[in-house]
Length: 78
Image 1 (cartoon, rainbow, N blue to C red):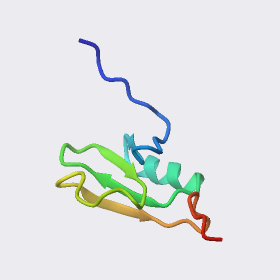
Image 2: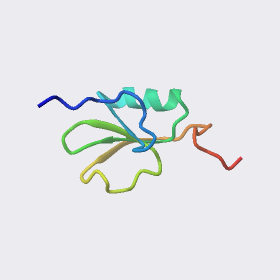
Image 3: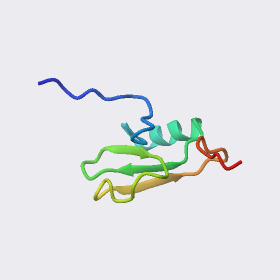
Image 4: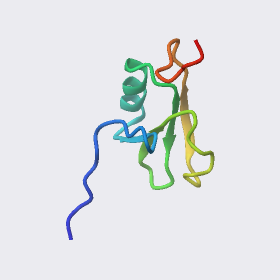
């Protein structure tokens, strides 16, 4: 059985991306003007998620930081 491949691009359909650490997740999101949250999952892994990610999807996840950029990538109101 092969190991699961990890996609290194932001998966807009899932609206999440795994990272090795909180700092890398924050840098990725702010450099691309993505709003969202950086979570630590119950298994200790770090996941960046968009603001519309369903609350409670990752049970036991701890919010490490909230990212609010001046220019959100997905703001279509203006």
